[in-house]
Length: 378
Image (cartoon, rainbow, N blue to C red; front, top):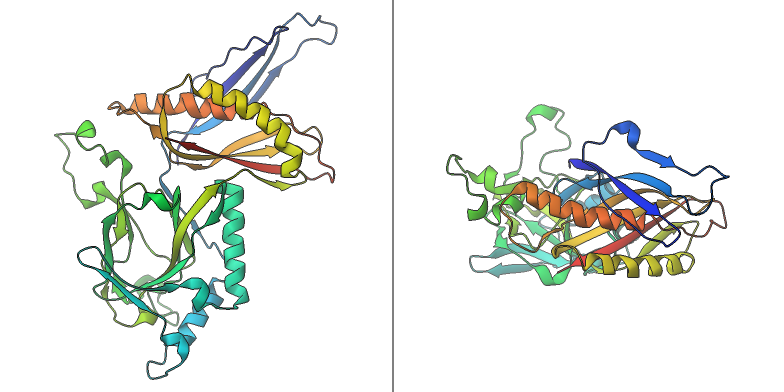
C-alpha cells in the first residue's frame, strides 16, 4: 500500500497556543525526524518547535493478506486430512458437516471449528495467536466463533455484505489445491478452479461518480480476487460486497477449499511490552479527549482505523506511529480522488500527529512498548 509522507508541526508557546498542519507529501527521507530546540539559556517566552514526519496511507486499505501466518498450519491440516481421507471409514469426525444452502446465495459445508478441533492444543494455539495479532495490530479484542468451511464442486457464495458482525472479517486458509508429492512446482495439477475470496474494488462502489466513458471495464477491474493459498490470513472490510467464486472440479472434501473464517470485533486499546494499560491510561485519556474535540472540526468520516504507537522505554516518548488497519473514507460522496486523499490526510494525520505527542511513564522493566488504539467512524 502506497503511503504519503507528511510533517506534523507543533508549536508550543507560554500560553499553550497551538497551530497544527501537514507539510507536503513529498518530504524527503532525511526529514524523517527534525527538531529545533531553544538554546538552554533562552527564556521560556521564546518559541520551541518540533517537527515530526508521519505516514498516512494514500488510499484506505480495505483488504490485505498475511502469508505464512501460523506455524502450526500443517498440523491442523493433517488432523483434517487424517479424519477424511478414507471415505469408507465411519469415524465420528466425518459426521460434522452442515450443508448450508440458501438459494442463489450460499452453498457450502460448514461446522464450528472449536467443536471440530475439540481439545486440540494446536487449534487452541491458533486462536491464541489470532487474538494476539488482532489486539496488537488491529485494536480489536475479540472475534466471533470461528467456522470451518469447505467448498467442493458447485459450491460458493454470491456477493453479500455482513457488516453487523464486526469492523473486519478474516479467512484463514487450510486449502491444499495440489498434490504435495508433485515435485513439478510450475505445473502442479490443481484439484479445482475458483474458490477465490472476491471483493468489490472500493473505487467501484460509487460507480457513476468515478465513471470513465473511455474505459473498458471487465471483471478484474470490478473485483479483487484473493487466492486461498495455504496458511494465508486474509483480512477485509466486510462493508464491501464480497463472496466466494464458485468451485469447479473436485467433489472430495480433502481436495476442496478449506478455510477458517469469522469476524474481528470489540474495539479496545491494547498495550504490549514493558507498560500496562493502567500505566498508559491517564496520558491516553487526556490526549483522546483533546483529539475528539479536534476531530469534531474536521470532515465526517466512515470506517475503522487502528493506530500503533511504538514507545521508548526510557523517556516514554512515542518513537514511531503506523496504521495496523485503515478502512477510513469520507462520509460525503466526493468525485475527485485528490479531494478524497486530502480529506483522509486531514483526519488521519491529525490523529497520528496528536497521538504522537503523548508522553508515557518510563518502562519498569526496561522494555519498549507498543500501544494500539482503535478508532470507529460513522
